[in-house]
Image: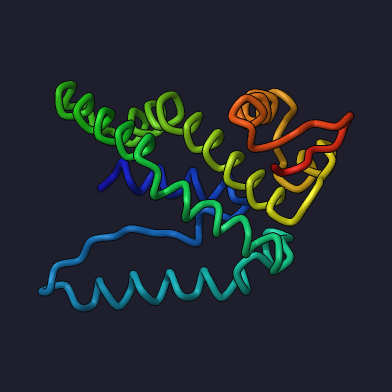
Amino acid sequence: MLIIEEVTRRLLELVGLRPERFRVDWASAAEAPLFVQIVTNFTEGIKKLGPLGEAEGLDQGTLKWRLKAASEVAKKSRLRAALGSLAREFKKAGDYSPENISKRVEEKIVPILKKELFEEEIKELLSKGPISIDAILKKTGATTDDIVPILEAMQKKGKVERKGETLEPK
């Protein structure tokens, strides 16, 4: 569960949401006061952040399409395979420290999350019609290095056509 927790936090950050909006805690059925404290503290923290996207400076339209892209990323078999591989590595090494989990997720999972998220966001932007590369960079927050391989792959597959600095869906 610790690995999925870290991956979820990283995906929230990539979408532009504050990771404090997600929390995993444990309390047994015999620890009712602890459970109440956990829920109360989390609820108070969320109230301080305000409505989803507000503290992050995301308008509702941007928030909606970024969350849709993140949802699609979570379904990807490439991500699930990488998570399975990483879980086996942790089991073999036996080091489940928060520092090691954070480091390994950064090395093995975050690059996949970024690529898949940007690809989904680009697909969503292209579904609305032609768009400039600058607009894609601005909307996604990606760098040119992030999107060039994705756009090249989409062109190679015949999903997009580049006309100068504008991309048109096919």
